[in-house]
Amino acid sequence: PREEGEHSQKLSALALAVLVFYKVSGGPFGCEPTVKAAGPFFAIMGFVIFPFLWCVPEALVTAELGSAYPEPSGAIAWVEEAFG
Image (cartoon, rainbow, N blue to C red):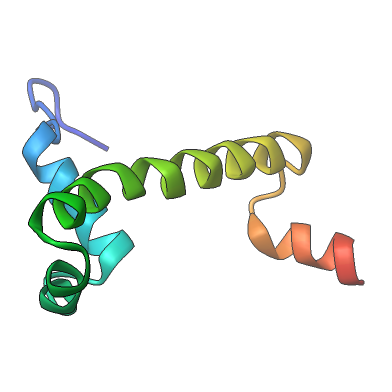
């Protein structure tokens, strides 16, 4: 619990972008072959667009399943329901 008067820090847009980059691409490792294969423009566009194409559907599925199965075990409850 927070003490009275304490404020939580908010995540900035830059910090969020860095976190999404590391989640989707595994960090900077592997960027060089991507730039070499696709060229700098398409590589940067891919690094900017792909996290949204990947994370938005993932977040929607997680939200839907989280509301359908409100157990605290989360994904374990979904797998047990699906596969027994």
